[in-house]
Image (cartoon, rainbow, N blue to C red):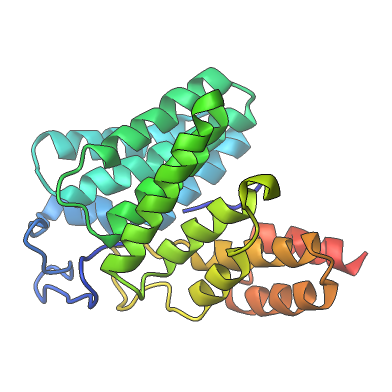
Length: 261
């Protein structure tokens, strides 16, 4: 299955709260003990739950974290909870689509989009995630797809403008360009955006509560781009480099097998 994906601070540099190791930002509150417990390593927890759900063919592992986040969000205005709720909904949508339950997949991704769209005072990471979940939703929206594609581009550029060092901003812009048909102008910027994403750190400062998705996915998409454009040597180079950085990547592993054929 395609690796997915899968962030926080306005205007450039990520600073850490010494007591809570969360970024200082006027819209982010310090984490309490329960929030720390749930949000510590949350990106990995969500992905592992997604893997378990696929193995079990049951959404229960994802739903456990979903309920934890909902329960905390009821009693806390912390925007990190909203962010990770949306990210989890994204994975839930992928899970249901793999089960060929398109109706449920659309329902889940619509929740993900609404959570981020309704968030006030968005920062770079918020806009990057909004663009990501919008990009997944586009497949269900028929004639609205062109409008959503425009929104993805707009939100990706906002993310990039607010933090030019946010690799996720470049990844979502590259993904949108890669999957846009050539007759609508797609495929012209994907390579540049992906190379820029790979030049940036997954996190500007290590933080277990914040996102790091986007870099692994950028390697995978760049390899696909070079394969699509018949540049197999470059595809091999970046697949090898990606696996050195992300040796457990399922997507890159599958691509490596293809390149060795």
